[in-house]
Image (cartoon, rainbow, N blue to C red; front, side):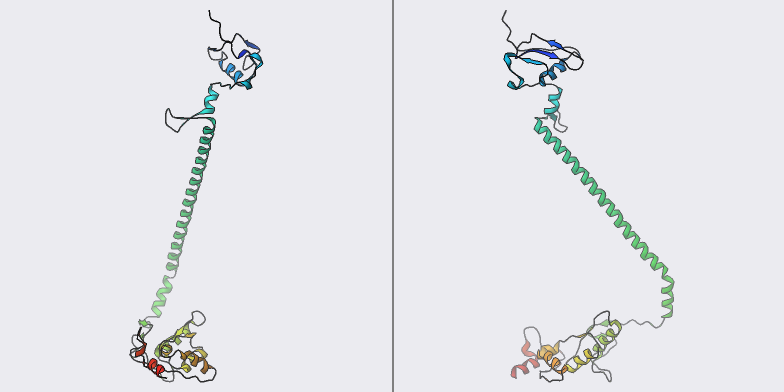
Length: 285
């Protein structure tokens, strides 16, 4: 009979679970441990893995060997299922830790997305509530003022007139808005600006425009506080020196300039300033 190859472990003294100083001797190169549950199989595996009660041959220690114990702990530490795919798994402790970290971060991401959606839903709810409250407020105000509006319409019956106002030509009933009323230096369109200034004074700046061809008229409108500003068109196109002449006139001085001819259709068009009689007069001078 051939002699058995000796084991690297000469014997084990088992002191785990319900076992106390239980010897395991006559170990060979390959050993089989079998028995019912509770017989001690797992206890032997733990003892070898933890070098607990193990006597090594030839004065060696567990550090001289790569001790591998394949039990449930080894499976839990080194194998993990890959999602829901049967038969597919990840091997190695580092990979398992990485998968756990990914799972944790994925769960955190889901929690944050859920929290974000909750916040968005709450914001929409409040926004909708604010819009609804505003609508209710407006409806209530309109309802509460209904009687006032009825009384106002009644007292204004026959007194309200509808007139169309155009910025450049004034009110449609005016046959010639460039005419001047007696005693006033400006035409009807300028007067309309003056009336607007009276109404909006201190609240909205009002400019006056149309046929302001004389420096004295511009000075009159500003110094009398009839408008906030004057807008100059044809007068400046005819001669840019109009502005300097106006400043000089405000100081009691005189500066010559070429006055606009006030053509029915302005001849100072794009690309053809030579047709403007005031422009041609300035060139000759």
